[in-house]
Image 1 (tube, rainbow, N blue to C red):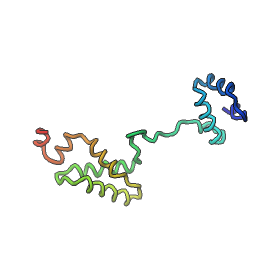
Image 2 (image 1 turned 60 degrees about the vertical axis):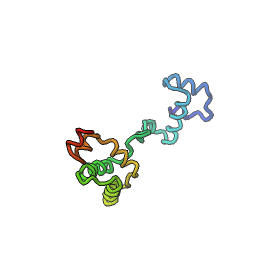
Image 3 (image 1 turned 90 degrees about the vertical axis):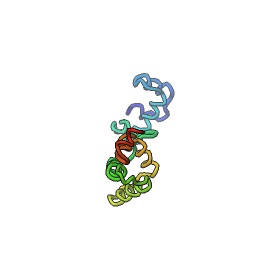
Length: 133
């Protein structure tokens, strides 16, 4: 990469040769070269970045994720059957107390939707209600 970065005007022939040597496309060579230059010529700058989770992925910090799980277990899955709004407020309050950015209401609703339906009905209603559903 260092030899390639030394060339000021990169021609397609040089880039194509590097692409063939590396087994990647021409576009990928240009992207690697940009990372190399932005990182000051350090090899670690070419390492892949941590994934953001992608579409519908888990993007919450581990601490916030733990808060969401805890509140859902201790507050949502109870016989009192609190509303999603009430649970969201509890999660938001716990995050603010600990100095974290709170997840959105939609995120909390998606976490609730991901809960096992049978366990949710059993916890919030009763075993008989779970059997009928």
